[in-house]
Length: 196
Image (cartoon, rainbow, N blue to C red; front, side, top):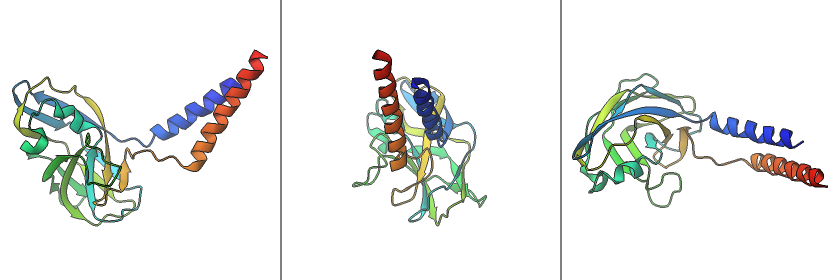
């Protein structure tokens, strides 16, 4: 019985993880020189939530926090280079603004998140958004050791901060809470029977 409960929890965790969107980033420079961040391969997202307004805004989850230690003036120094995206294979649009955090009064984007913005346009459920491989370089020197190359989490929001694609911040449905509570209850009963 305990094994079945643990199995159910593992299945729920696997289902939650399947919605994640990850991107592969490479880093160079730093330690007193500008930092270059390279998106190694194209990243493709399908709009899975109906947008309430125009977009997209790309959010690198927790990434501004990684950069904060090495950029004494914060991200305000800006970036150069070129990252581009397209919606449904349209003409590429350049990422024109990079910053930290989100608008006040919303809870989706934190101060540790990095946003990437280009031109805005209407988005619809099912649209395919592609962020093309490319690089951005800080305009100021990165004072510490660079972050590790690897996989980082990204999701998309619309201009109203509504998550619309990618590694969406988890907001479990009531049925998910019920399933987890039931699994924990079954595990508790199995433990009590085993001790008796």
